[in-house]
Image 1 (cartoon, rainbow, N blue to C red):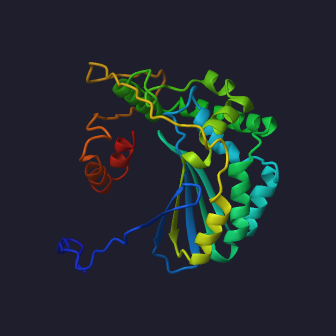
Image 2: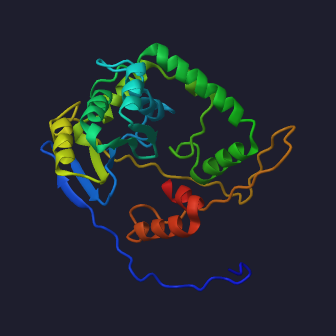
Length: 292
């Protein structure tokens, strides 16, 4: 192999995307299944329409999602972690502008045990005050570290300049916002958005009929304040007229450069096409740009 010679560009001869199978649970929750796995592993993504866009104060959506694993009516935080570890399951809690995500990887033979823990997390979290203070203290320390990094400061300036201070994507978090988070604040957000009327479920991997049945048995009945109607909020973004924004930090040993541009909105007919192109060809930058 001569690495000085560029490899020939070839067209894909067999390019197939397995179409998803979409059904609905008895309580109306959309269920999407992509059965494309060879190993006895399944991934389950549970989405609730409760992200930064819906929160009434900063950090409310983030910590509501993160606190789901910190204790329920049935399990303590230690028990949840121990059970998931024992059954070889992996849990990730995250959120975006629009959604809160509960992502679980599980071995097929332990799906029932894993679902039991996840069900308790989703349907009966306690938001214990002691655990919340511990998580807040940890995040405050991480925030203070981040604010000393020029890359972090440049990214915040870019978002605020593109969207404005009143837009959910342009609101800048400060240390006082962490201290304003209480169990009651999180519980109010949870009751408003974490219910079967505001939920979607995605299954992928080696999805068997038994797994689908267990998911239906676990989440197929109405739960939470499902009668509440959630509406899509609209926030106009106001970009600053300046094209070059400088954010100074004293004693900084390096500089950071961020570039951004607002494009078409989600309502545009070509939005999905552009998102795919930006993600494929732009990598991380493209996906981050289009996520807002």
